[in-house]
Image (cartoon, rainbow, N blue to C red; front, side):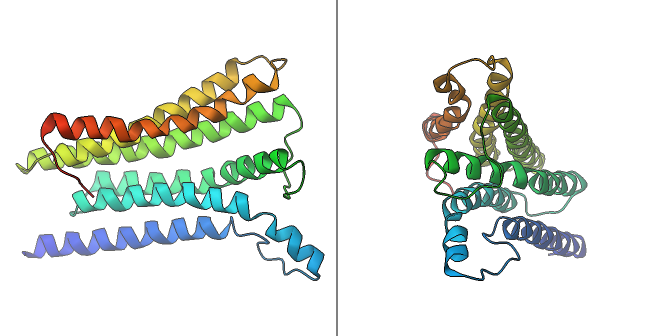
Length: 230
């Protein structure tokens, strides 16, 4: 390893530590109770009611963090574009954390008929539309940033004479949530406020189409003769 590669490795490690720390910080913003200490059993039970929303938000945020981890496995060297896109991902994560928590807290509160606590109560379609749009745009921005990261890694692989197939696979995997987030936001904007509740659930149900990632990536592997990848 020459001096340049050693320096780039150090810079890549420092960037990854920053990204990891930023995502860890966003998760602390989701912790039930935040900085409040329950003063009674009733308050404790009230805070514990926020576990479902926290668990769902935790899973989504760690999904994006792991996407950056997987990208680094293919892009070991540091460069300016990777740095800018990684910082952009952190920027969107710090914005996304609020609509993320509001979305799940509001939905679990509605599904449980108030049994789970939520500072944000979805009681009209106007609020629901705004929440869907904010969530969808933020979701698309984060997934789209990961698409660009994997696209850049594919370009670097081709430049260095290596196979770009694993990074193309990453692009496909993140294009699905990017498109779904955009479709959800657009659908929420197009739905009339007087539409029945069943139709207003459709922007949320769209995200369940993320299961398409599996068939699409499997088809890509078979087409190019690839085995299982990490």
